[in-house]
Image (cartoon, rainbow, N blue to C red):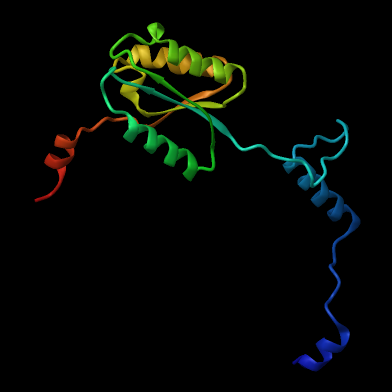
Length: 166
């Protein structure tokens, strides 16, 4: 049995890592920080990491209220720590995606690297037609981003009430 008094006299034990183990651990830490051996200096702790940026895209008819979906997207982005680069609204109703200036602008922001993704609350705000939706998603991916839908299946309030247990 070891006495606690003896342990205090000796102090904490030294780490028993070999020189090779220390180098391996340092290499793992460098790799995690984005440094590839032989390619420039090792990043310092002062290296700033920017927050992920998204552009919120909303589409609705000219006279509809989209304050709710806008708030939903803002709160969603905030929950993930995403920065909102811009909010783009199209008030054109059911035009096909290729006819919407706002959607083209949102994709352009991703292409310019002002944002990494297009965030929208409902899949139907891009298109209710699967082929059109897929084309938009591919166009965002081609420029280096992705299309993110908060609620891919739209449920209106009457659907939610009928699904609720009584």
